Length: 77
Image (tube, rainbow, N blue to C red; front, side, top):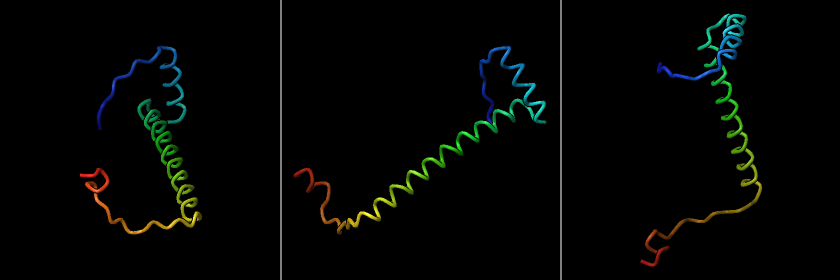
């Protein structure tokens, strides 16, 4: 696992270490859990957005025909 270097205010660092100790983990574990939570929430948002777009597309009734052109046709080459 890669290491990272961070600059954190001393007071915040002391409080964060205390929270980690109370939760029975390390500061690294606490940060790792926090980052994983953020990433999971973002992935869920993207999934929900994709699901909404898919629903809109499917309910629109639009039918896309077979593509019979190529790049050269589009650019008049």
